[in-house]
Image 1: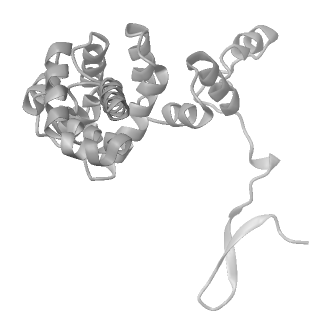
Image 2: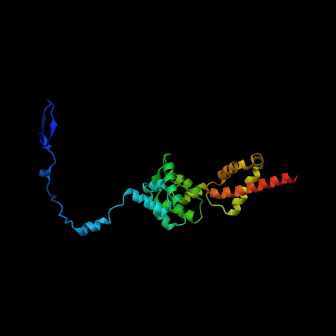
Image 3: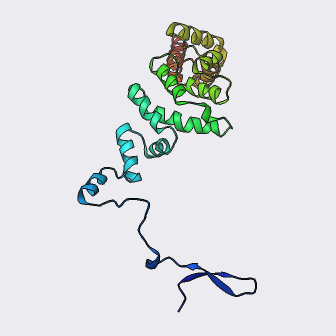
Length: 239
């Protein structure tokens, strides 16, 4: 039969002995480590240390944070899972879905544009979301701050906020700005009617992006537009 050994090919086409193949005759105790007795107590203590299977870990994240499967896999498989958990402990009012999407999708998107995610430290991320939780910055500002830091244009969150002029507006300043923008675009509103909403939002976000949550701008403009169009319709009917 075949000899239980490993052989090497020579230049003349023959073979020579290289080494024996592994087998029971080559097994021997490790001489540098003391023997470890394996009893039931040891086995029982190890049971609690066995990691959960991947699918159970993902299901646990989905249940604990209310994330869908895709986002659960993305955040768990990212470099930011630990900071994700820390953020939600210190800022429980922030949506886990929102945090997970910022730490995965937004950072990945910026990284694909050759921005350096390693410049974004855990302390910076905590600082950003702490400011969000306190109402000091708007949700839309987060990706702008990420971008500044990952470009190394700014070395701190505070510097990035000041550079972008992201001081959050109060309601009085916001509504005043939107009222002026609305009045400046009355010709478009009269021409397009309800379809002018997209134009109004686009122009508003060009001025207010990062300073106010987009949903708040949308709600105010939509209500103002409906009121304006209804009043115009009523005037036409009465005449």
